[in-house]
Amino acid sequence: MNPNENDLTRDEPLPAQQFQPHAEDISATGREQFRQAKEEVSMQISQTWDQTKEKAGRALERTEDFMRENPVPTILGALGLGIAIGLAIRYAVPGERKREIVIESPFGKFNWSVLSLPFLWPLFKSAREKSEDVMRNGVKRWKKVDVERYAKPIRKRWRAWTR
Image 1 (cartoon, rainbow, N blue to C red):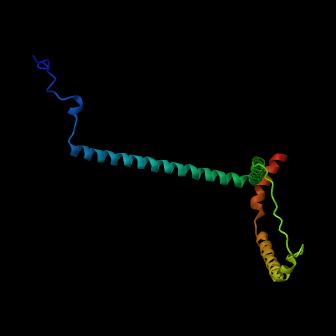
Image 2: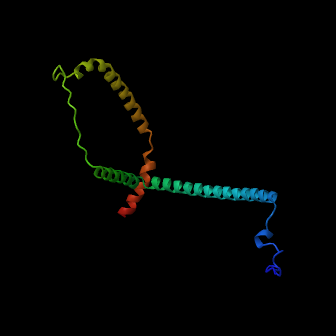
Image 3: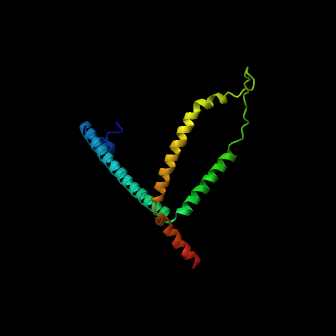
């Protein structure tokens, strides 16, 4: 006697076998799903990038407006931040002892830099002449600066404080 003889589900396919498409269908739907997923991801990335650019642009505009309206606190804040960072770095790095290498010259303690002065004299002379021109041009440029544009917000705030 065969125990599986009366088993009625023997000829029916298993649930996993029911939905097995052909090999051609698998590759076609897999490629299609991959393409769709790729398009969705690229669309989400582009939307995220656009949002990020928009937020960065707004932040830049707000920062520029704040700096134009409040130049003194901005400069003082940057100065304070620079000092704080400098002190933090100074005290965070352990102090190293510098070793000086002493080289003994056969000519003793003769100062050789005296010989370089005649060769450098023309350089110093031309630098002095050029610096005069630079200073003259700089003064002309500073005379053209519109101070009222920068001083007006400060005067308004000073008046508001003193009243």
